[in-house]
Length: 117
Image 1 (cartoon, helix red, strand yellow):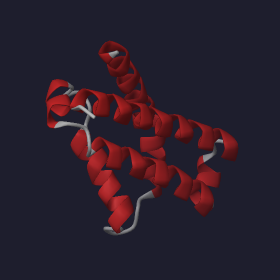
Image 2 (cartoon, helix red, strand yellow):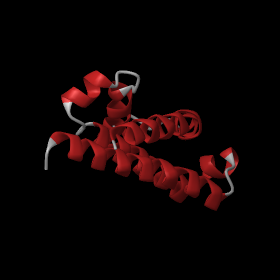
Image 3 (cartoon, rainbow, N blue to C red):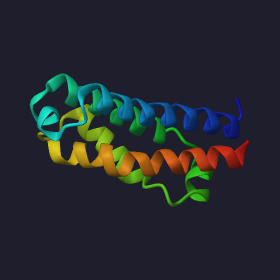
């Protein structure tokens, strides 16, 4: 698979995980209090963020250089924290990331994907 097709595939998967974050919030009632207390809710969101970070890490260097507006380093760093447990994962950061940053990332990826096709 050439790099462009691979990047297109990766973007599709990132968009899917962003959508799953929204769906998970809706399923659990989109409440910070529930999120803070519910390990399944927290873990479901964290797992999608982990997957997004893993996928972002596999985007080609050419893609990353062309689309510098995506914060690859921050996305991959969060993935590493979730994966390797470097300290306690902060509930507020996961909540804010899933509500504030993920919708922006999804929109960016959808726009890039539309332009690439």
